[in-house]
Length: 402
Image: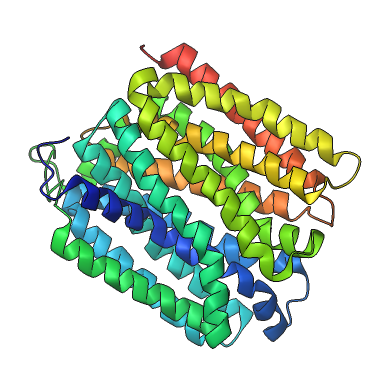
């Protein structure tokens, strides 16, 4: 454990997990309301409703460009509070939106604000830990991050049982306010303003130097690209989950159960990774999981060629795919951050921006092909994982020192 940690380790994990999860809560709680929102604003095409997911992801992707470098300059906690304030403003705007366009703009602002806890959580962990220990901490924190999607759609339906869809955004605003209070009271400042700065350099010169340091690391750039393709798999799955489970498989109100049970598999994978990463190493686990994803998504593609597979088979295959995804991601994340100790905030921004924006745009392109058949989704999964595996392999062989 890092000697710079001033709060109990369990509380630190919970706090980091909630910082990572607030965006997932805002993303997934709205899923059960997509049909209701579409009806209210006369958005009849289910694929067009996916824009509420895409707008949020674009906002969180773009936002991550700013918070990390600024947190390297001005401190982690200051930028965290600014981001949470913007997130709450986006939630309140969404709650009073009177058109689909206004709601999309509010989701964009909401995502832009949610980028702050997303970036700063990773930077804080890297400030305190490195390598296999960072992967272990991230795995534990991601269990909390994954528990949120397990319950988020059910929470959304619970809110809808007592209020309309506007209440979902008020609920997420309240959660962000609680996170701000908890962070303000208990989160240590792991990178104070000016810490690690170049002597005599102004803010713009410092930012330029930090950005150059990130791009000068082929290990960081290579693993970030691989993560972007992996997150395409997750984001296209999330964006289309409501259509797949409710429209294609006809689950109706049981949709949160199917969605959450697959998310539970991801939590199990993260717990296992936290247990074994220091024994086998993040490099070995990451590359084994990425390459195992190729035949796993290939099997889903084969099962979809002759028509949609039965629900039980689709569930089992997606559970396997997302289990392997969860085994790969925290380890690849830690490997990408290894060279980035001094500029952890800027590196976290670069990693988050690239992975989220790649996943949002590629996931949107895949989701737009959904037409009652799972074949486009399965083909997109296979292509994304194959490219991720090839990029990770090239990065390891060419640049890693093991």
